[in-house]
Length: 198
Image 1: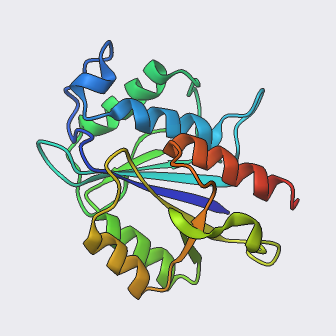
Image 2 (image 1 turned 180 degrees about the vertical axis):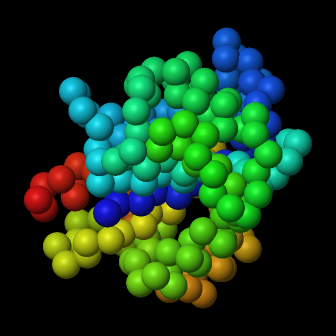
Image 3 (image 1 turned 120 degrees about the vertical axis):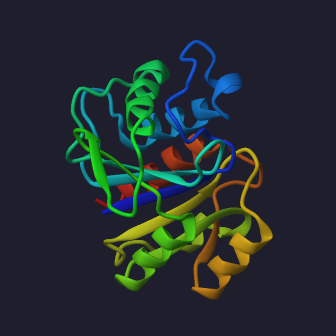
């Protein structure tokens, strides 16, 4: 199982989203929609072995965590507007500590970014932090890693406190490129490497 977790620093936490202006009205929710596209969509299918989390910290009710489970997703289209409509539906509900299903394969809660990562760590999963200054991806051997979790930042990135937390729990830093890449592009590059190991 491949899992991706992104901290969306400004992404809204309620359903008041202007679908005609995702970048301007929703704290760069367009970025999250592109990440969902990259995490799951193939040419004529979905990746069933992938889970994607977006932990939104924008106004007015942070945090709200969204979880997309590839094996359960239905009726989701690859365009940003369609994905945003499903996100809007989830964000229109009251989040609690319990994961609740909004639509098929899409869940919401008020779990914190660190809380979700720590849960993965405690369940024995390997945590990787995608970072410009990490070790080159080609130096890692994923053949023996069946359950991997990749941490991403949005256009703002992770805070120093977040990075210290990741270091404390033993997350390994991986660099995909000598250049700064968009989060959705990082997801595609990771998929490409892991696809070749099948």
